[in-house]
Image 1: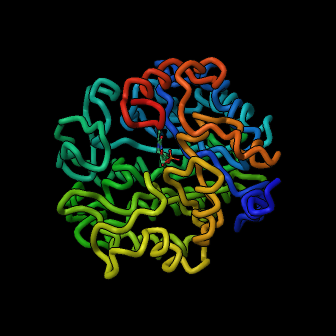
Image 2: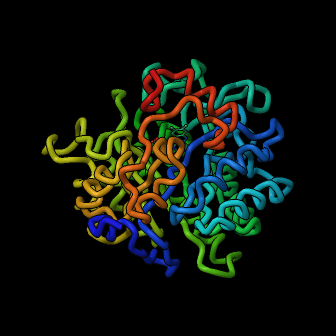
Length: 381
Ligand SMILES: Cc1cc2nc3c(=O)[nH]c(=O)nc-3n(C[C@H](O)[C@H](O)[C@H](O)COP(=O)(O)O)c2cc1C
């Protein structure tokens, strides 16, 4: 192995004592391939197994915690106990290959396609529709209904219940999906949250929902987990909309999250080295540098965003992030970590080979989404 890659492959202990075998994790990626009833398919289980040998931890695609949180066609569910056997199948397939299995848990809020949720009723923090061209690319053009306070409490509870199911299914942890414009972010955002109760009105109150979810999950873990269980939190640093989340807002949220006893924070970025848009003084410093400064070693940060080659990873790692997530690259080359380990980094493939769907074990719905979206993946024009 190239000795410059040794730090990437060194072990890392999470705050709860769980040891990761190296610093590379698989980023959560929706694959659109589950059954309509929310159970996983063999095709997606095989896709995960193919990618779980080298990395230290696999974060699954997001799964919905309540029926009205289903955000994607072919998304798998974790909203009732009947889903535990399906979740178990996924956890086992990942763990069998040697990676820790972390379930990403989510509610889509105003981003849910109406045809996927009961009675087509879309809910959010307030009755503000998403803007086209906003943080996500697939906003439905619908006006959501604002959740009542009692319903907000039910959803917080549902995040706890889904965590219990993850424990029972044998997952090593959960990642709270507070990023990419979905419900948790909708509560933190001044764009989507216009509430005047205890869940909105000021920056502090907009943090109440995300922080209550963290507390509920921590409580559930304490009650139900028999071994150390990983709890991570993912967030998007900024929104393009006005009003919208600024880098300054996010640093306040991150400061609060860093004191919550989480096992990691995970920023959602398309470009690891991107700079803030607004809300902080120095717009030339990277978002990652700002985050590391605010976190000040209180909790590990996972960095992500357009890391393809080993050189990209080395450069990102030098910023001081302890863990790196690879998304698209692990779809393109599932053997990334093994190639680095074996000193074969020159053989890493960084452009999708469109003749290799079968060899790469990519389910049809994901494959079709990738090849029909020019520019999304390197090698797809
Ligand atoms: C096909 C696909 C599906 C994704 N689904 C999710 C998801 O379910 N949850 C999430 O937090 N991020 C999701 N993302 C974002 C990735 O986790 C990651 O942040 C992004 O792709 C940038 O990393 P990369 O450049 O290594 O791919 C998805 C990305 C892709 C390409």
